Image (cartoon, rainbow, N blue to C red; front, top):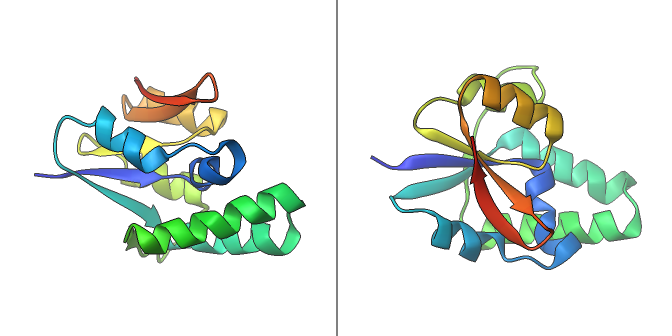
Length: 129
């Protein structure tokens, strides 16, 4: 059975902000089958950044949207009014890994013993938790 790797919005900005190939690094990190996915609200967050963010963040968000399409990331529909972080925590379980840089979200996930992929030293990915 494939593990789901949920990519948080801030994680998707890394390729545009720090020129990191998160997809190749995740592939190297994983030892079992996986599927990359996002919540549909993540797309809305990226679109909002494109409209209201600074120049660097706008560029990173545009690249993130392009990569989502190029890599064929699965979109998880959410019928809730909850924010993306709350949706991620609610969806998380033993078959889910979350890729995020968000400190508060990481803390919440660690409390549930959820595996996390995070960026270290602004250049490589690693597991936490």
